[in-house]
Amino acid sequence: MTAPRVFLSYSNRDTRDATTAQRLAAGLRASGVDVWMDRDSLAAGVEWQESLIRQVLEERTHFLVLLSGSSIIAPWVLAEIDLARQRYREDRTFRVLPLAMGQLADFPGADFIDRFQRVPHHELFADQLTEVARAVGVIDLVPAVVAELIADKTEYFVGREYVFDAIGDFVASEDRGYFTIEGDPGAGKTTILAEYVRRTGAVAHFNARGQALNTSSHFIRQLGANLAARYGVAPLAAAVDRDRHGETLSRLLIDARAEAPAGEPVLLVVDALDEVNSLGDPPGANALLLPSHVPAGVYFVLSSRRAATVLDTDSPSRIFDLGHVQSDTMVDIRQFLEQAASRDPLSRWLSERGVPVVDFVRRLAEGSEGNFMYLRYVLPELLSESQLTLERLPRGLEQYYEVHWRAMDTTGSEGHLKVWVIYLLCQLEQPATAGVLAKLLHDVEPGADAIAVQEVLLEWRQFLHREETSGAPRWSVYHNSFRDFLRRKDTVTSAGLSLPEVSGVIADVLWDRARS
Image 1 (cartoon, rainbow, N blue to C red):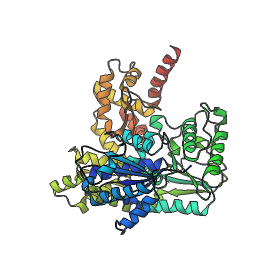
Image 2: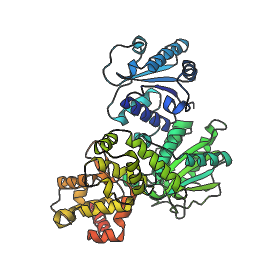
Image 3: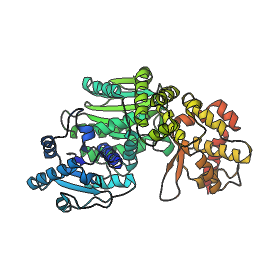
Image 4: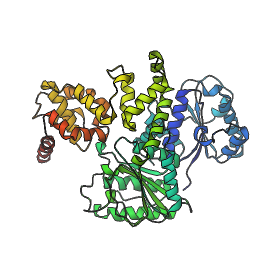
């Protein structure tokens, strides 16, 4: 099957336009769409030239133009619209997709653009991505939650070229196999794989224990749907016999290799093998029932905690340990901080306080100890006018958690509720609403209703993932490094409870529900 080839036209002088374009491109690429946009597709030092753009347009199947007050006065966008008009005259199968992001004044080329049905505009990015994907002919290829994860993770991505070079070398030198990125929690493994998917369009599966998206059944169903859409392999039956999951996975890989263009590798990305729930899988099987023998031309790019996952395989296998490139990681950390310091609101925050960028970068880089998750927590907190200051930065992710644990008042009845809410989320294997947590708490906190639980969740919110649903929002622990901290012996002791006690409360409620 031939993937759509999209030319994305937008104004890079407007931050909103540029951000939307980059996130749409990332989401479409995650679905296997070939997207051309100047940010990624023009080599460094190459300027915009009409002859170059005309040549690119001749190879595209779709012209997606983001229309805004900024883009309709941008000379290059207007020129690209005119070139799209010329291409359409020559080939009426060429699809023109206008996406208007607000009210527009008249502009040169409007007579041409107005001939085409506009892509509906949505404020919520996931809905917008779905509309654009549908417009280019991609229907449910990648779940919206996966596409949005990739777009979010890669928005301000920097560095890591040494990792991508290592993956490229493995694919070039081996005829198949497993390439595994290993690293400590918070080292950026998921973000690296998200960027790899954005660049290559590889089929991707992101395990998420907190959202219960981490079983072999879920993996095989999602992979089957993705490979059917990408390569045209036979779709899976509505229900797949669990005892035949391994056989089904091997068949999918063989069929995908047979349908893929000759000489093109089948790239499959699987994140967070250490978070897989293997309950019910055959004893001794690989995580997610990954095959011991990989078909020729098929490559898995995996991630896992260091030494947490061992694969039984006779195929080529290589491990890339992020802990062995700490100096390179620190270079990437500093580059990320320098770019963050050039953007508002952080740029304004530094300017108002007279903080030199070089001092800011040095302090945050040292405090992070090379951990990107540390920056994910600390940067927003600095901007929120909390007690955290550049002069009082915690050292490393563990110390950051410890500072917040001590600051969270866990004494008295309110403190008891705070501890139980966060530990229930720690031990649960799936997201839960405030109402569900209140029911679980009935015996230990009889007076805690959903409103009281919701207030506690908001206090812990920086460490939690909130999933919007058609009903009440569902909550889970955002990152496994925080779950590890909560399970540390000294943390459990200070909380005044035990993990078996928490798990027992969950089990009792589930048992009562099963009997009723």
